Image 1 (cartoon, rainbow, N blue to C red):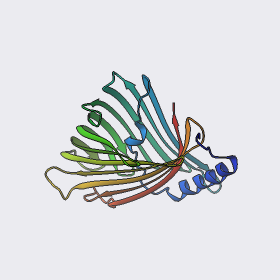
Image 2 (image 1 turned 30 degrees about the vertical axis):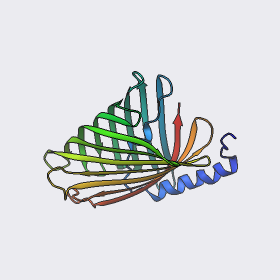
Image 3 (image 1 turned 60 degrees about the vertical axis):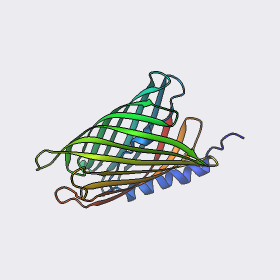
Image 4 (image 1 turned 90 degrees about the vertical axis):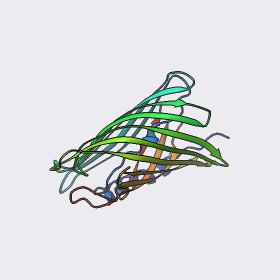
Amino acid sequence: MGKRYICRSQMAVLLFATVFFLLSSLSAQTIVNTHDLISEIDSAWATNMEIQGSVSSGNGVFTAINSGLGLGYKLNTKSQIWLLSGYNYASESGNLIYQTGFINARHHRKITNSLNVQLFFQRQFNSALKMTSRQLLGVNLGLKKSIKDYLTSISLGLFDEDEKYFGQSFQHLQRMNISLNVTRNVGDVEINLTMYHQPSLYRFKDFRTLGELAIELPINESVNLEIESALRFDNDPHLDLLPLDFSTLIGMSFNL
């Protein structure tokens, strides 16, 4: 039996929910999860896209755009390279609320069918966190296994981090990277849980944790509706920032 897709009446309800959730999460911190932009490469190339957006007018004009793009290329049966990027923007009556962006280049190489090594470089900025730049260079060792109905990926690695904030000098340190990704299909619905924990190597009280739950419903063979909720905690936030952020987004993803 093939996949059952969303009908028009269901789409109308979901689109209404999209606007509602976008408007209810304006002040929340949007966190881009790179797991969402990486997939298996069946042929030579793979392209994954995500986009959410909202425009409203009345006493003021509100605009929000959240997007992500992943481009993958298979070098051979054991190696692949990925270029990932994301951009998020929100404004009200021409006044900026937040603006974030990132670019991530990575190389994945299989050691065995279950074990792989990942090299990555990332550069980003985030006005909501008062971050002018953050640059990462690191390596992960990953394990992927199917446990009953769950596809599980676990990674352990290290990365070098350079950060700069508004009104603050340059910060340079090294962090551990511990991540868990669990995917399960319930009928045609895909449920995905991703968690990151990144403690400083020399100050374990300085750590960051991210948990994200995503639900994906197919519209057709290439387009899916996604509902994502993310919880971010920074035990040692910079400047006057709060340690906890929460966001909920609904939008579309495209697998080309």
